[in-house]
Image (cartoon, rainbow, N blue to C red; front, side):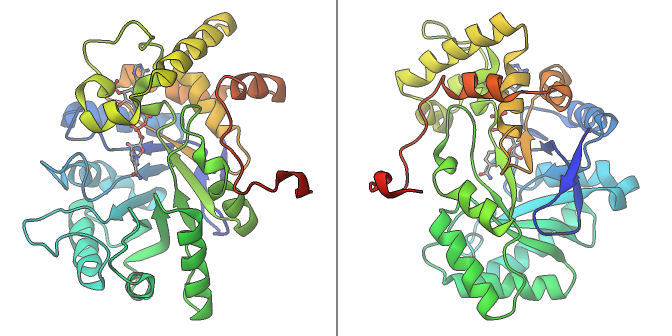
Length: 327
Ligand SMILES: NC(=O)c1ccc[n+]([C@@H]2O[C@H](COP(=O)([O-])OP(=O)(O)OC[C@H]3O[C@@H](n4cnc5c(N)ncnc54)[C@H](OP(=O)(O)O)[C@@H]3O)[C@@H](O)[C@H]2O)c1
């Protein structure tokens, strides 16, 4: 396993982060524990979670399971969690008010059985709460030692840039990491988010490297597996609803078969090969699925292979139309 610095921080993290969204959902406690231990054996020291995981039906369960697994070795780990989603019956049990963030951190700390969360993400942008209110809450929690690095996920680049400027102007610790969706099937982050991250030396932890399973080799234009997120989960079915995605899945599988490398290993390695990416966040429902993701740690993808893969899906259009003026 290779390690790298987390953005501009002095913290070293594994170049694969393990996402625990399946803990307590697709994976029961025993299966979650098996995956956790496989990750540790492979050298992963970075685990991603959220207060809402595994789902809105049982929020907090992933943190509880992760908390019990990390207890004996907490100080060797970098733990991330998130706040935004509705986690309780009250209308204020959600979003990014100071009121909710302060309560959410306390609840996450209890479930994770720890006294601090290393990387704490605002899970989505909240158009109803001033950015300054949310960032001030993070700064106070940081000074109290309850969170160590503030971060954002699913924010547009302009929103992140606004947060950076707001924090800097007030001498608060600026956002240290971003967590966008990113895979060969979803490349929007290349346009603005990754360039911003490079220019500001932000940590970049990308989620969905296998596009929710689309790039695992089990989806083609004509066939779907009996079980799988893209057939069972409405949100994902819609996210990858267009025919293009299944054409890409097929082209990608053919490419991987010709190379003799597992599609999941290839999909994770392609994300990891981007120089703006600190670590892809890998996800799995059992150790069998996890195995090819972990194999990406040992895969060297040269520039020619990277370019061949990149050519399988269209790069998104640039951020502005005056492309002839770009230098
Ligand atoms: N910030 C956010 O908003 C956000 C959103 C999503 C995820 N995340 C984080 O990122 C982590 C990873 O995200 P993700 O789970 O969406 O990643 P992903 O790699 O795109 O999808 C993982 C899913 O792909 C399928 N899969 C993986 N390996 C496979 C294999 N070897 N063979 C067959 N199918 C395989 C499995 O789903 P099936 O078995 O159901 O097909 C698995 O649950 C999460 O755990 C979470 O920590 C963050």
